[in-house]
Image (tube, rainbow, N blue to C red; front, side, top):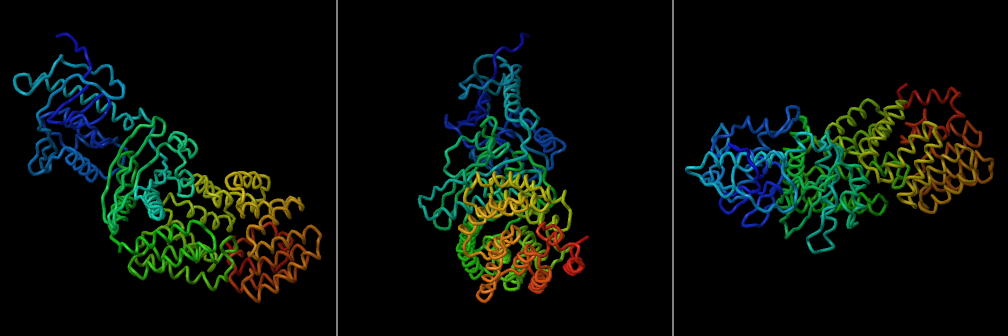
Length: 631
């Protein structure tokens, strides 16, 4: 027999045709939204046309041996999506027959022949057509089987290249801001919330680096090519999609796109009621994980299989709260807390709003851009909210992280805080702020290399976040790498020129390099951006003190003394001015006030370079011992 000559291009059954060249399933010429795993399953069934394909055979062909996925769930979903596209039924099948506990069989009438692929891509050269024309079941079934098998092999070679290594394994991805198809601008919070929730679900997968919300939101309506976005975020793939809603009914479409080739790997649409949105996000994340495929740990499998319904009104209020929380300013935090409280009123058993409240209270208790409240007024509230969230849902990584931060900065409980941080990152490995906060614990206890690793990981997950960029500069500042700190702060200000914390920390770095005019210039800019923050004024006073301008330093101390009658002023910051003035007794007096008030800054006693003048004093070692900083 002469060797086959022409490549198989189309496999037809009923009103459907499978285009081997294009890797597409069409109905009466119209392309169907079926890609990836379901199409691969169809190819395998067609390759064994009329014969049973066991589940074990499907497993071996679809997944490498070292890939850990929920096979049963993935295969069931792939078959269900195929049947939906084909209008088929499991009870009265026309195309795909299920043999319980055995496998599946393609039973439709099949034709094969040459046809017009749509995108010009060629199948492997060794795939040939057994002869011209169309072959039907009957006397020429054997020839048809050879034709169909050859075409199916071509399809699998085309679709399965990434699974066999022709395309690099996807190890990183970004969820681009979902497109608002609601037709209403006032639904942006809802669509952004859907984006955020999908990122949260995917961030539970430890084998994937998933870019955080802060870094993907700048691409909203940016109009940049996907390949360019992927390069800028340094990811292998992107997830794009749309959101529409009608009342309490939500429809989300999502597609997974290989960044290098701009090739669509998977696409699906989901219709749910709003109360099932949490489950929906996990389902999409699981589908993406199966399609890549990603290695899933037992914990991750349980998390992504979790199904919970929430009160629709409570869920919508929660999304509004998160929308304002990410803005990270005083006014937006107040609005966020109001929405979280309303969500709790609607559904007291819904854990996420409690976690949101905890996140707000935690940051209110710090000395930075949204802080300035006495730790005793807010940190117990943060702790109570986080504990309540975990009573309702112990799998909330954000709540574990907030609880850890309270234990670290308020209770000075390093072992307890580390346990919670580790649990948070086990549940959500892609949580950038979890890595960021854990780095605070590591650096405060002298574990510099581990702290740098966590800080770097946080930046990999959220490369465009100003706070995460500043955090890495803070690490360099407290490890006395001042030039590296300044370089990092320059990069941050290129992202956001008016970011107050970047100017603030640049002032502190200049001060350590004894570049006092530059330090005061940066601190003056910080005061313009954060005029009501007393910690900024304290640091201005410290720069005055170390630069020899004692009168200005004393004036700042007097102003802060008056300020304490109206609002909280962190005593630790006042102590720093006295350190700069060379007045250790007064400095220790204010450090004792900071100790009594549970100042969050005391955890950095052993690494803050501004305290160097006190380190030889026995009172300093005693304070470190009482705070409990690990030695």
